[in-house]
Image (cartoon, rainbow, N blue to C red):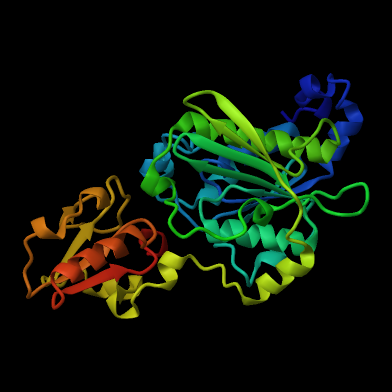
Length: 358
């Protein structure tokens, strides 16, 4: 049975501020959701459930068991499957008036403008700083509103960047809040996060998108909301629009938007997924996973979390080649560096791109 729009969205249409006109605006809207993890997955589900007509999901990653405590629209049976595809199937079961499109690869400088075509609002659900700045700069150049969300332990950040103003100018963007891309801020995998703050920020981002599309209420325009879940405190950082389209155009030409941790990795300390597959039966290969609960397509000899990875305590065999693995190849590279520093002549390799690329 397929319900009518009036049946499905009755409670929302009943709001005088929304009504049938507002619901029609949602039906005609297109939203790009980049990242289908802790932020992106609930964002996509709530937007579809609100009646957004077209949603494009972008994520290169697969479901990992460590995701499930906060990425609540995935199940144990989904572990190892592409996030965007799993999320599309979930949404299609409850949002008959929403068209879902999927891109199962990472956002890059090469494909970002193609992804932005025919999109009304862009939503940042990523945990990668280079990707956040790429989304920001591309949205400024293409004059698209960007609903930003970010997490750090118990803190959450929300803003609606690059909003068209009545005088024809655009509101502040990410670079007006943080001009330079930080290089020492850990992601959720490294710093940890509580699931409640993830859900809080995700629904706050949904709220911004709905306001932008329907024209109801006041979006977080030229201000960044910072919320702390432990103290239930929040503050708003006022933003002054300094990084104009001309300035960002110059930045975009020279910026690679590649994660610095990946860009600075020693190419001589790498093993590709294809190379590892060929050597899995080699008795001289020892594989060490540096994150717990990884969904692995092969057996590992040891699991030592990166936070407890002490090269001084690891007994090594100089006749063996050690391969470090993690989800994306970042923590495993840190482990590779530690072993190489302790044992310069030891053969130690990092699985390039981690399990996500395997």
